Length: 296
Image 1 (spheres, helix red, strand yellow):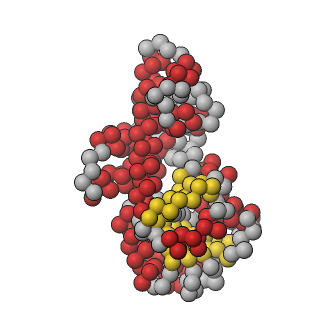
Image 2: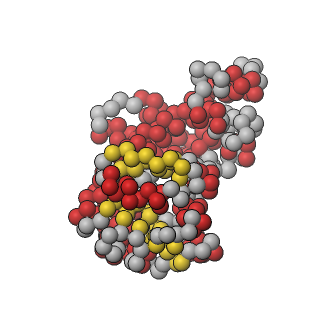
Image 3: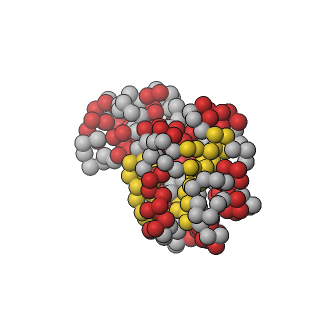
């Protein structure tokens, strides 16, 4: 079993650490939140005193951080790359901009380390269950070295190509998820207002051409599918403000690649409005509140 340094113990990182421990790995963890560190320690991890301490004496460093600036700081600003032992493999599971991911890869390679960008899909539920999808960018050899660690946290491990292409894949996925969430909310509210019971709408659309994975499994209308956060007062599995972050990344990527994404732009504007209305800490399915603020 491996010695692993893990940095970033939020809603996703915390469960990922617990699954690594369950798989028999030895974890040394760091986070800015003392409470998050203590919770991981209670699960069997050892507390690190700093980012650099988390990177010393381990075979792998896994990071799960909010934004690209955090990744740059942790890896390149006298952080992980300056402290890690030779041969350490770097796994960044943050969802960040492609440019920063590629810069981190370049810095790691220059310092002699293998690295993959490995953003995830599956939300908190997938992190808890160890069924995440990892979308990985980097050299194939680096991906193969990281697989035994990823397998303790996820079910689907996909090598998407060169450095940064894991991030590209994740951004495309989440742009589509945001569009699907908004579209599902619009259809469900409109149909119910015109007189079709929400259960009937769901049953018909989920077996028709309008169906999507999001519509069927995470429907934003309360009471129509058991797995949706809409049934639990929109308690977050994936917060709306994080969806907005990813949608903004998609629009930046669209601009850099000269790609027209009118639906992506519309979803970005919708989630921006939702967050401005104070719903950012609710689940992504709360986008329905933008269409019908009184939905119950």
